[in-house]
Image (cartoon, rainbow, N blue to C red):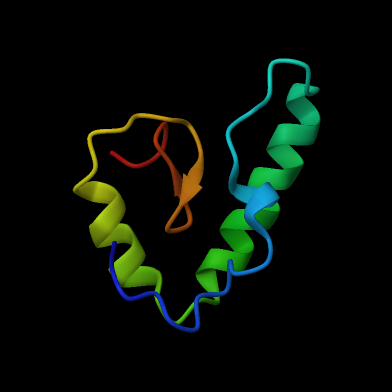
Length: 72
């Protein structure tokens, strides 16, 4: 795990989580948009993206202002 000291996501993990099967897709989209906006203000954005890009997990969660669907 990289040093993400000062990361904007601290205290808001629920915004970044993948869609729960019982969650309305519109609610997931809203959360993920909010998460991406928060990431874009983060001082650890590049370190987070570098770490996410090195991970084999393809979970559609938001990491480094991206979801796996939009990371490529």
